[in-house]
Image (cartoon, rainbow, N blue to C red; front, side, top):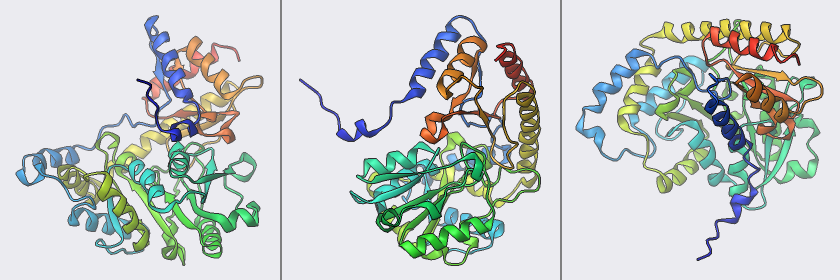
Length: 389
């Protein structure tokens, strides 16, 4: 039998991370203590009051059954209340909020809900790979908005050709940004909303890193801008805010028609978030241990300052981001993103992420994650320094 998989799989770029995983295992097999600064997975534990809430909720028989795809009414109401306290705007939990199995699931399914074959999707480059895969899996045509250092890693919306803007169906934005760590103020969203309303484009904002911020920075929401309710949705994740990456819970809110369209996809494709996890998420969103987030951000800030200073000291150019737990650094002269990443892994035993893994616009950069203790960060940089780049 000759098995033929779906043609859409050929639309995905080569998975260079698979090669890096192979190299990592090869280095580890030699007995090297590999330091991984590649994945954005918090090492700080989920706060104990959230864990305790899960333990209690998991014993309830009513939570052992299929959950509703849109989420518990109490979860959606609590998410809307958290949002109103944090950003200001209020949303109807019944029509304008939907639970997600982590924001990644919602982002992927949102393209299924709104993108038809031939529609143009405006995608930041570099950017979270799911924006692209969701587009091409649904027959969309990607148009990449290159994020350049000179423009603060912001997309040039004014530079989008008129014909492209006319055919565009969806614009993805992500600030605070992964992988660059770039941030914006409200005026940027004002411009983005005007662009979308003028061109009849849906705006999807991935706001997963809004709470991981430093130096007094407070990330805005797109819904702080007039007109956003007409065209936008915003995705939130508890993964980064509460160190809950493995729990898989988040939510989307915004325009009722768009949230409802995503809900229609979800009711056919998934069975919702485990209700005990939703109850634990409610505990987190209610703020039973409000100091924990500040404590964790202080840890990440300390690591940021340490790593940025150490990288600059060995000649790597990088900025100190006001949000996220990523450092976006330029590769040394004579290297590509991949060749530098491979040398650092093979010869220093340190895993970092090549910028080109986030799109062609990421070439010339690498991403460091701040998700290991400070002493490991110091050791990682010492190893890289020993390479005498």
